[in-house]
Image 1 (cartoon, rainbow, N blue to C red):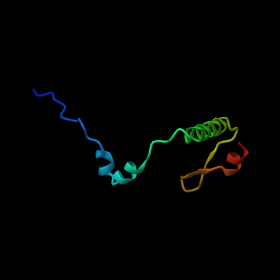
Image 2: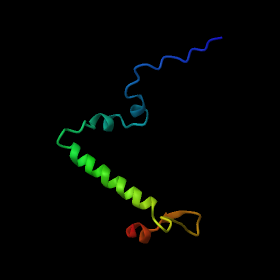
Image 3: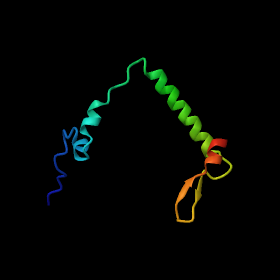
Amino acid sequence: LDLEVGNFGNQTGFVGEMYGTGDILRSVSIPSETDKPMIVELAVAAMEELVRMAQATDPLWVSTDNSMEILNEEEYFRT
């Protein structure tokens, strides 16, 4: 009985190459110290917006006649 899972070591880039996004992923750079305050500000604003949407009184998504749901823009802008 062989229970060995296999060799899954060192597969850097495998997923990116598999989906054709290897070049895009390689071009992403690590944020500099000067970028970090802007990133934090953006994250805080996004978190506050998410909390407001979660506390909305009316549904943010409404059903349509063709079994789809669309954003309730009126409620979204009210939040």
